[in-house]
Amino acid sequence: MFKGWRQLETWQKILWLGLIVVWLVLLYLAIRPTGVAIYRVNDWSGTYFLHKFGPPERWATSSGGLVMIGEPGYFYVRPTRRFNQAEITIKWRKSSDVPLEVGVLVDRAHWQYITKPLNNPVLNNLHWPSLMNGSYCLWQRKPVYSSWQDFINNPPPASQLALYNFSWPLAITPKLDNYQAKANWQTLSGKWRGSQHLIVYVGPGESLAWRLTAVSDSVKPLTADEREIEVNIYGPDSTRIQSSRFSLEQEQVSQEIIIPSKVAAVYNIEIKASSKILFTLATKQSIFSWQNQVWPVFSPDFSWQMWTDVPELTAQTIQPTSCETINVGSQSLTIDSTYKQYHIITEDPVTEIKGRGGDIQFSGNGVFSLSSEVFNPYPRRVGRFLDKDPDINFVAANYEMPSCNEQICKASAVLPLKEAFWQPNDGYQFIIAVSGGQLSTSSPLTIEEIQVKLSGSNLWQAIEHKLQFLWLKLTR
Image (cartoon, rainbow, N blue to C red; front, side, top):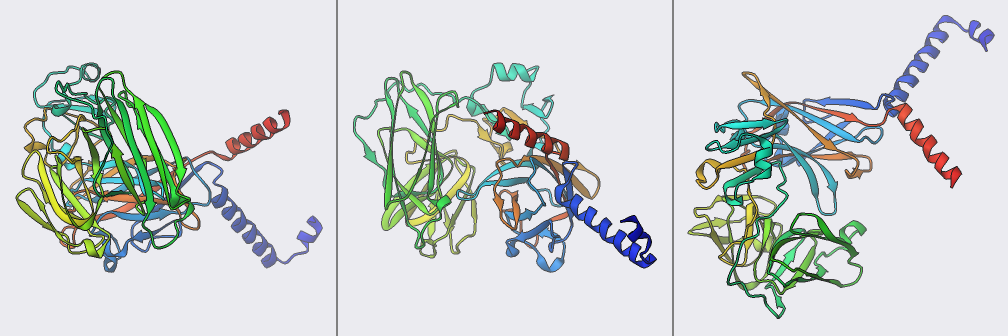
């Protein structure tokens, strides 16, 4: 072989060496032996690895840069192998001071994302006395707690507390002296679309009792993922006490939930389902609400009403026939386009929403109820109207403020990828979320750079895992 190499012309040797170098570089890029890959982008056209910034109407595509004029925005990261986590670092112009979060898609059938904060102007400008514990921070309107642990051990009433990127483990079970359990099942009017999260009060000696009947209203056959329905029940201490998965293989499928409760308690029912699935709900409970979002579907001639404690209501529809004007307290909200979010600031602590017919999704920072006595035993999430809520005396958050100079702000968030959805040929899908409908052509979010640092097993760890796997196979 060496004799043949010596017989080659100089230009042939250079060519062969060049091909070997190219092959080694491509091999390195493919396997990433160190377990780390870093990609950067600063324009809308993207790169091979960071691509598909969309939808196009939410980006100022003519500018060439990364300028968001609508929300949320999406992009894909297409690495050459799978990784365990992604550290997303975004630099943006300081003039775009908006609530900013980044997330990764984990469930495409139900469009669920894991999100982490990058910027929260409310917390950045909250000048209450505060105390820190790592990335956790507690703001107090008037100092009461001397340490984070003291706050955790002796929390304030839920009505006085607002949270951000921090899960509160316990619901505050109210004392309802005149509560009487119902003996008969009641079927809720209308149907209820897609994923939902119910908060339910169960009295002493009463059973949590719900019936779910699912049907598809899709013209096209559902995919395997879209047929999947998952129902999780969480007990008073927020631990999952029951979980079930079933598939909508027939025209309809039903499930009954019966869980006895010796004492008064708050339960959570989490339903994960495609927005192409409609549920008929029946229950024996009289006190319940939907957390953060609800999607009722009513017949055209049905006059409906519900109540909410959200300070800012968001409404949207995917059905042209559901473009209508609804009443929100003393105000009117006109929905005249599909797939567009409409926002309105509510005027009262509890606001009535009324309409006729429709297929409209409502969302906001709070709960939705079929009763004017809105049931919300949990602390509120931090929103931009925090300073207008005199009842909030404490704010707890897992949040680090962005670093800013005179023109540019920068923040990072770490997202897990082990459970993330992988789209063939496209990779991982990420979301850039800006709450409150604050972006437009006149007030955009101008992003200077997005950096994605992927981390996973290095070459030696991968070899070790393979050897361990083979050894277990051989020794069984």
